[in-house]
Image 1: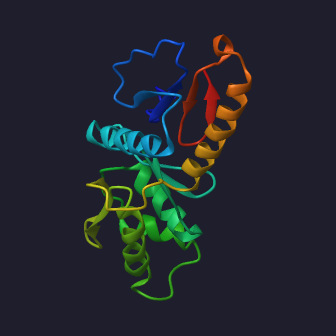
Image 2 (image 1 turned 90 degrees about the horizontal axis):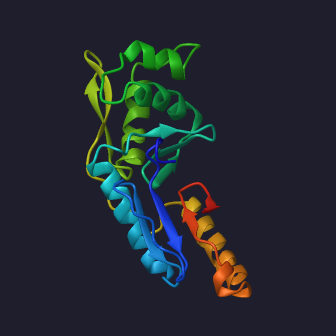
Amino acid sequence: MQRAAVPRLVIVDQLSEPPLSQDCCQDWMWQTGDEREIRMRSHQLSLRALAHGRGQPRLDALGLLHVGLRSVPLPPKEQALAALLVRDFGQPVQRDELIRAAWPEGITRANMLASRLSTMRARVAWLGLAIRGSTRNGYCLQATSPAPGPEVTGFEDELDLKRLGAHRAESSALTASQAPANTVSPARTSRR
C-alpha cells in the first residue's frame, strides 16, 4: 500500500509499539480511539497526501474515482472520460479523443462533451480535482483544494468503521497480550 501511496491509518493496541514511519500517507492511533478521531485522522491523511502530491487520482473497476481517502462514483460516460483524464493527469487530452472514448458511435449534439464535463466538474470538485481547458486546447484534470463534503469519506469508510467495531469486539475477547494491531485503509482493514 505504501508504494501505491494509499493513505493508511494503523490502529495499535495498548501493549504494542506504534510504527515509526516517515511516510506522509501513514498515521497511527491507539485502539481506544473513537470514531470521531478516526474520521479526523483519515481526513488529515487525505489532506497530507494531496499536499505532498501523493493524491494522484485513480479510477477503479467499479467506476469509483479516488483521490486519497475520498471517492465518488461516476456513471459510464464519465468513467470513459475519467479514464483518459486520469491517464494523462495534469496534461491536456484532446476533445476528439474524449468524444471517441465516451461516444464511440459519435455525438448527436455539439455540446454533449461540454455538458458532460460540466456535470463531471461538480462531481470531482469534492475530491480536490478540477477539469480545465477548452475545445481548442483540450481538457485537463488537475489537483485543487477539495470542496467541502461529508465528514465520512464515502461508503468505504463506513464499512471500515463497522469492521473496526467488529474487530474491537473480537479483540476484547482475546487476552491483552494476544491483541493484534490493525491497519485501516480506504478499501479494507488488514491485520498487522
